[in-house]
Amino acid sequence: MKPRVIGILGGIAGGKSRVAAMMAARGGVVIDADRIGHETLSDAGVREEIARRFGAGALDESGAVSRAKLGRMVFNDAAALKELNAITHPAILKRIAVEIRELSEHGGAKAIILDAALLIECNLQTMCDALVFVEASEGLRAERARKDRGWNADETARRERFQADAVTKKRLAGHVIVNNGTIEDLESEVDRFWKSFVLLHDENSGGKSDG
Image (cartoon, rainbow, N blue to C red; front, side, top):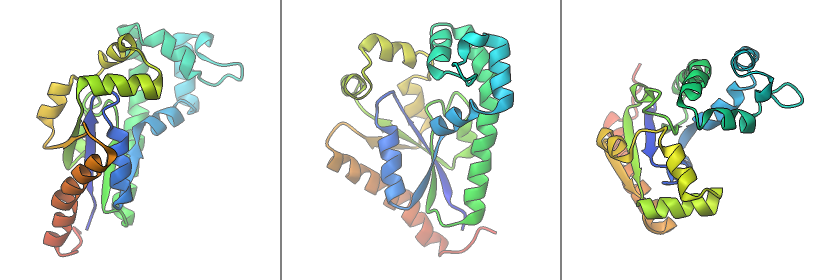
């Protein structure tokens, strides 16, 4: 039986990666789009395209792409960010599709968890069997962003402008996991979803392969 693909949605500092990690502890395998994005910047073709568009100022002393320098160039310039995404996103989407296919074919995972901040923006929901929205209050998210990432309210708001809003994400999701309480509360929320969506599906399928 092929594992189901679960896409994680939520606002900045809402707890998406924590929920993904909890699902991994229950037998899921996480595909981290942020990791893939970092690795994509090391691709020779992508690096050359970035240097051609943004100049040597986007590279570090060794000639590698500097995420810090590149970030300063694009995060206050919507047009520049769009151009960067046009360079990197095709390679990122290809890698994600390959990883999903390999995990599906090799078996062993109870589910494949797609942790991608721009899941909706990159149309990755088409690769998912279900979307889960991790809900956290705006105040809690702002506090977590400040404590864990060192971002003030302006920085968090600036970054959120480049993402779909929380209302849209929640509307698109078929499942909601609330992250307004303790770690134990969140574990219970993840457990509830995991049992109803993953384990129940396994039981109903009787362990049979989809092939």
